[in-house]
Structures are given as structure tokens and as C-alpha cells.
Length: 79
Image (cartoon, rainbow, N blue to C red; front, side):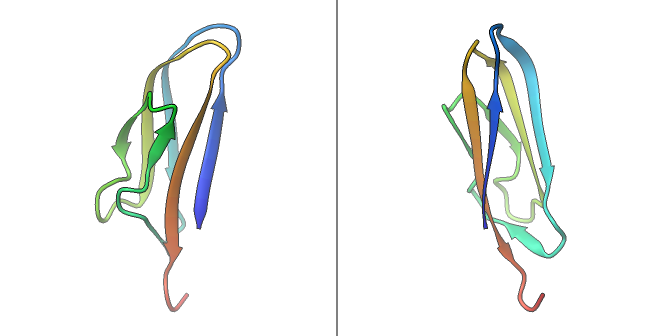
């Protein structure tokens, strides 16, 4: 599975933005798959083996900017 979340900011700078997502219990997060574009974020949870959630911190999103957060997961076998 490929996930993409887009955070779109308006006319002012947005400070201290947090993004959190918990994956379904029948999936496994792809180790090292969490990334942002543009690369203005800090991945606080999600790139280590065994992580079951994604947490991103963005200190500031410039005005009129969109940030895309991408990550992958696999479905457990058997489901």
C-alpha cells in the first residue's frame, strides 16, 4: 500500500504542525519509507522497525505551500 497525505497551507506561515497516523493492526509500516516533499519535516516516528504509526513534525510551513507526506505499508499474510 502507498499512502500520500497532503497538507496545504494558506496565506500565512504555519508553525509547529503535527501529522499523526496509526496504521491498521493488519498492516506493517515500510521501514524507512516515511518521507516529505519538500523535505522540511522531521519524522519522529515511522522509520524504525516495529513502528506502527507515523508522526511528523513541521516547524514551519511557508505560506501558500503544500507538503506531501509519503509512506508504504504491507498487508499481513494471512489476513
